Length: 258
Image (cartoon, rainbow, N blue to C red; front, top):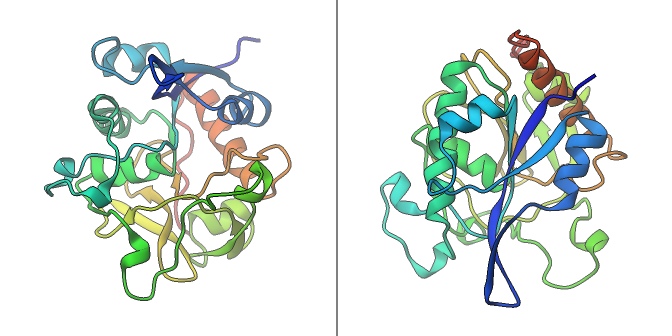
């Protein structure tokens, strides 16, 4: 049986500081193939090469990946500063309208880290460049040193809305996650429901209210050890089910609060 196709949004990199490339982490492909049961397809997120309409015709669902470049603050009405870090305007030009188009069409997507932030910005929300600078907030950035296992280690709890989408999906009101991000949501966008928070009240999980399809996004990185992690596995399994439903000409049942 042919697997449904998930477009994995790639990021721009330079090999040896001179050869430009679009790339996606193998842990994203592994999560899609091994847990979601879908065919991973790396997408060069640049309007010079692809259009949103073409992508939606080729792919059954989308994985909005994490990445070092941040959403440009002009996309949410603010001026860029040094604190905002590096940007990828080409990716912005694809992913932000893609989120809105998927919402309108009912096509499934899953957002991770930057992807979580893209969903919020696409819906008119705002971000803070360094949430660790906000009163009462912790440093959620990736540890600068250590092995991959150490950098992606589970570092804090995320609590979900009792009876909410993520509570029912995970079977628990509280889970442990990793954390590797500097920016965070300040004002949720239109229809953005924050459904999970870190211990310092940083938004960590969301979905879009009234959506006809799968629109979940998380601030942590569930793709790491997705096969074995009890939090990652149900998230990717549910996403894979939604993508298969779409590929079969159905709109998967929407995950809603009880």
